[in-house]
Image (cartoon, rainbow, N blue to C red):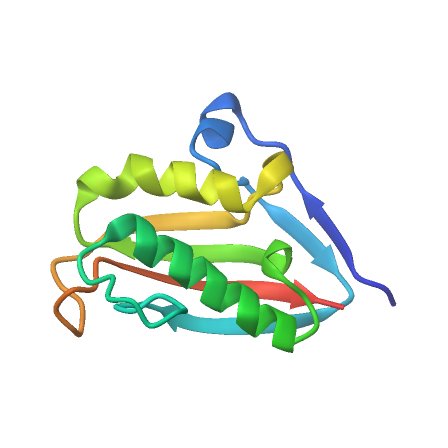
Length: 132
């Protein structure tokens, strides 16, 4: 059976927040992704406390893992995003929209936490992907 992925169209609010109300899959393999955090970007540069750079790096790490499994970032169907500062929520939405063009957003939950395991971390993204 081949992989089929259907993103249900969201409401105007869901579209404005860059998430899908549901993603339906059949076929394929499920990839359970550990939470990604980053205090260094892919080039080894310090990104402690830098929300945007950490989000971009987390998505790059998720993409790298999904490619190893036979997919890519577009294979992501669910994310849970943990942020340290609730004021970063709108910025997260903009960054997520950049990573999922065409409105094929993963389903998502966004939570604010009081701390992460290491100082300097301001975001963690975990997810579920479906690959061929």
